[in-house]
Amino acid sequence: MKPDLFEAPDYYNLDELLSEEHKLVRDAAREWVKRDVSPIIEEYAQKAEFPNQIIGGLAEIGAFGPYIPVEYGGAGLDQISYGLIMQEIERGDSGVRSTASVQSSLVMYPIWKYGNEEQRQKYLPKLASGEWMGCFGLTEPDHGSNPGGMVTNFKDMGDHYLLNGAKMWISNAPFAQVAVVWAKNEEGRIHGLIVERGMEGFSTPETHNKWSLRASATGELIFDNVKVPKENLLPNKSGLGAPLGCLDSARYGIAWGAIGAAMDCYDTALRYSKERIQFGKPIGQFQLQQKKLAEMITELTKAQLLTWRLGVLRNEGKATSAQISMAKRNNVDMAINIAREARQMLGGMGITGEYSIMRHSMNLESVITYEGTHDIHLLITGLDITGLNAFK
Ligand code: TGC
Ligand code: FAD
Image (cartoon, rainbow, N blue to C red; front, side):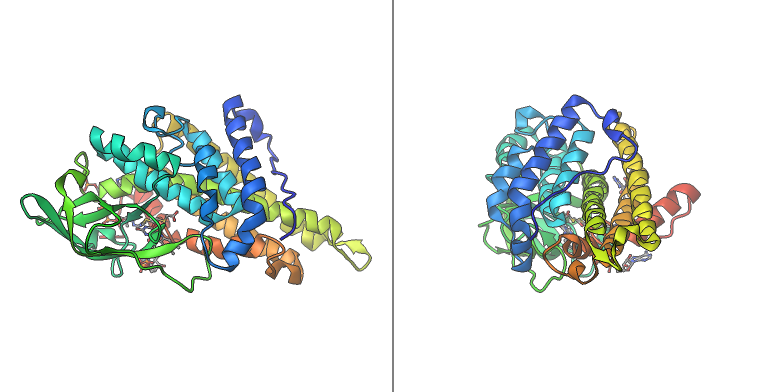
């Protein structure tokens, strides 16, 4: 892969909206990605393997629990810093950002928000340091967009719960020590359970042959009469709103992350357009190529503004789930379109691993599907503005 020459586009001087702390956090993550992710990521994506050696670095830049309080090992940062870290990591690779998103917003967040003090003390510091990795089991083979229909269930056996069922498409599953699993009790109420690797009847087969998110490990979670200790039930929230609350936090991170992937594609195409000569001129001098670049930076800038404002609302505790859905949907769509246009600008070179664009493009096919598909987020906006529910 080519050396990482990334220069971040900032067409509307958005740096002026950031605090010194935001910039320090962002720049540390940016440097780390340049040093420890860019040189190896293409190789790991090609061989479809998660680069375990970066776990310590992710912990050091605060990517595991950026907004979790310091007393639990988190970085104690605000929502804009959290977003900027996700942006920088996904600038490197969406699969690496996935690992950080799942660890922070889908594993640490529910333990912090819905767990008791013993659970927080037991799990959060180890997850923040990367000593333990986690995964989040919501999706099932027959219940993806409609998680409320899940069939994974647990029975109260007096001194423990007995868990049965299966989850599919689970990021980090093949190597996670801890799984936050959503299952129905005998009354059909959804609860979160912490399942640990090594519990009898619990297995995590890896999903192979992905053309997307290849540097992220994906797998199934299979529960065959797993005895889960009663103290592993998350006691402070139940119902579908509990996992969906975690998704709000993760979808917000994805909105920022998608900007990172788009920035990298735009920056690569801009540089290439000045270097590549055809018909005796740099291709950037042709109007058709300028149109592509001008539209890219326009859409990127709009997404940056939308997302920064969402971050301010999140810091004030005022962002709605529907606002988060709009940003996730808009930004991933923006990024996938920029990746497609940028790839064309590189001609044949655009399909090779010499450049990051094709990898981003393929990764974004997962990002536009997980955490709620493009269409599901549109229907969430539709419900919010009309009051009429297309899901019922
Ligand atoms: P519905 O009846 O609307 O809602 C059920 C209850 O949940 C509440 N609620 C929310 N609470 C918090 N945050 C949200 N975003 C919420 N949305 C809804 C709602 O108020 C209600 O509460 P209550 O107290 O009245 O019971 O539910 P529904 O069954 O009609 O479904 C709605 C729908 C389709 C929007 C939702 O289920 C959905 O978002 N589907 C998409 C599924 C999804 O996003 N799955 C993601 C799996 S995890 C993943 O992909 C990780 S990838 C990670 C990575 O690698 O980065
Ligand atoms: P389906 O729900 O079957 O949807 C198929 C199509 O139908 C989509 O286009 C959808 O938009 C459309 N559709 C569905 N319902 C409606 C409707 N009411 N109206 C209109 N159109 C509709 N899940 C986890 O729990 N944890 C994870 O860590 C995780 N990681 C993932 C990693 C990867 C790489 C991938 C690809 C997925 C991951 N997922 C994870 C699962 C992901 O959240 C689901 O794939 C996603 O929610 C969609 O579910 P589905 O694939 O079953 O598609």
